[in-house]
Length: 312
Image (cartoon, rainbow, N blue to C red; front, side, top):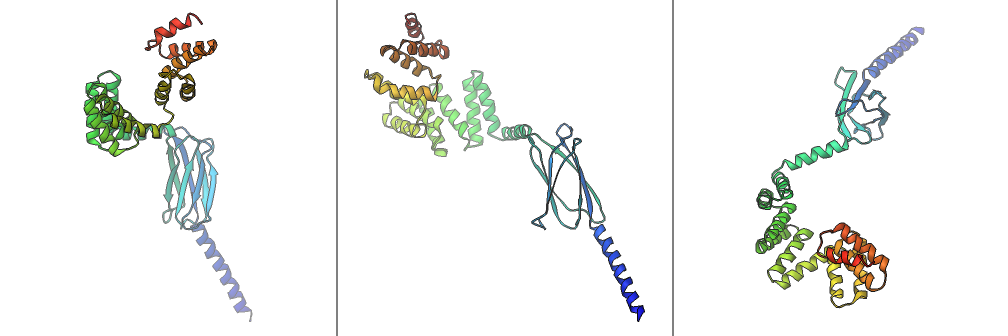
């Protein structure tokens, strides 16, 4: 009667031993090191391990001062995702599953800073057709070579017909070179792509005005004003209507709003200063006329401002 009992006990021991071996075999040690793009250790990086196979599973730790981390995975048969997060760096993710017969897995992470990633992304974009020519055109324009810049902007628009900055640049430079008809045509093309492009609406309004097409100019200007209700140039132009009628009180709120939007907008500083002078506010007049000369020392009203300041 005692023999079966002994056999049963021995079987349980064997089963427990086998289970222990199986459990140990499904474990794995995960380790790794996190560095920046120069190879310097990133301490305090957050390591998060999750599993698509077990929704509630999550292990979190931080790298030590050497940028290293270690963790034990109890069930290496599942699929996992390892995520590395560090302040100022781009987050990285890497899926993994421990290979059959492997108990150690080591990961190397090289993190790019956010600035490095942005710079790399910008460079990648600039090397694409259209963007490259656009950048070359801007360089030429800044150097004062508008004709060569226009050719580059047109090449950019041809390479990428929906590149609104290139279309806007073509319209603007054509207008600056005296080709109002070409500027208006280019601006219309731009507005077909982006009907709310402020730059293209402004050029279209200006070009239509030069060509004497008042209905078109008014239409473009109305759309521009709807999109940019606080444009200081528009506020100044609106104030000028009242100033031409000698209506200072009508102009006052528009000039004040203009200076609120852009305290350095030269025409509004001059007109507001002269208006304050007419109302007897000498200190205010002096302040705004001095601001005008600060931002536009060679402006159209500079001589008048200097002469007026002699008496303030």
